[in-house]
Image 1 (cartoon, helix red, strand yellow):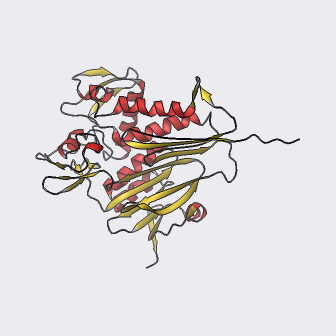
Image 2 (tube, one colour; image 1 turned 90 degrees about the horizontal axis):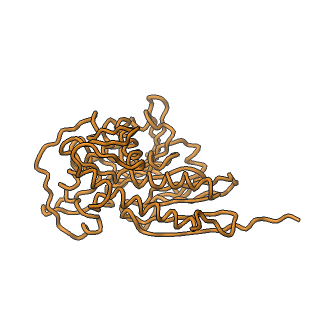
Image 3 (cartoon, rainbow, N blue to C red; image 1 turned 180 degrees about the horizontal axis):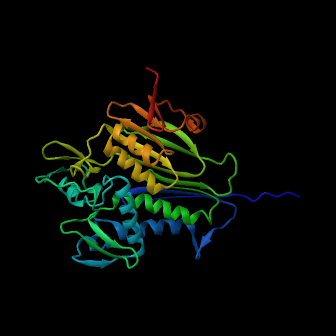
Amino acid sequence: MNSKTAETHVTDCFRTMNTEVEVQFTFGKDVYLYDGKPLQHVVRRWFENNERRFSRFLPSSELSQLNGTIGWMQVSAAMAEVLELAQRFYVITGGIFNPAILQSLEQSGYDVSFENLQGKKLRSQHNQERTYDAVSTGYILHSRTRFVSREPETRLDLGGIVKGWSVQRIADWLRHRVERGCINAGGDIAVWNSRGEPGKYWNISISDPADSSRDIGHFALENGAIATSSTMKRRWTNVRGEELHHIIDPRTMMPANSEVIQCTAIGRQTTECEMIAKTFCILGMTEGLHWVKRHYPTSELVWVTESGAIHYYGSHRLLSSRWKSFCPDVIHTGDGDLLEVISDD
């Protein structure tokens, strides 16, 4: 007699790291525990521990201790891993992905957790020129001993990498324990289908940056990662009536001012997708496309410009096979140094 193991579905939602986290599991056992605790509780504790370690708003966090230490400090293995990854991304982006931006964020008024910024008029203190440095990350890391030393007057903000890293690391750990899963931390998403069952896809939607109640497209993903960066989300107004946002262009040490207001990257690793999306928002469409084609030619990107135009970069095969209810205004495909732009116009 044939018997089919009943699937168990688990969902958990919680708020940490200044964002909403949603966890979904599917597995073929009635109870799935680790060290006597449900896996969703393990995931929640992982994110909460990372907030306590990496938050720049908590005086007791390891990052705050590092930013306040003069000379060398030995950091945890997790901190060393993130700092080493940030250095690698810094090199790949030619300094555009830069963790040494905390002073500029604070000078822009973002010196408290974002929930405490909303509805307030903030004084922007940008009154000095900063030198753009495409060589130095602002700190030295000895990977073997995990000792770190910051450059004078350099303080670090790891918010542009920690969320995606947290999603990716816990997803990698869960793949060997959960057959199908999805971790979504404020749009930084990792999904997997370890058994490779046909038709078992996760349906992902991309929100309209001008109206979060509607979507600009939907696609199906079996295994992979997604991350979105937007200049429209974390915004505030200073006392001069200027609207500012949290994505800092290290070339000016001011909020980025490109025509791209939102970018979603689809790839293999959440950390890479987060870095690609943020870098693209800073570089803008022309420079960003050349950079993506050089370093991540097989990735997919969807971005929205100030005019409201929706652009897609990727292959026609993927566009036609896994996207639903998606009608981009412009489709970009790359072939060597050639850039083909296909439009209805």
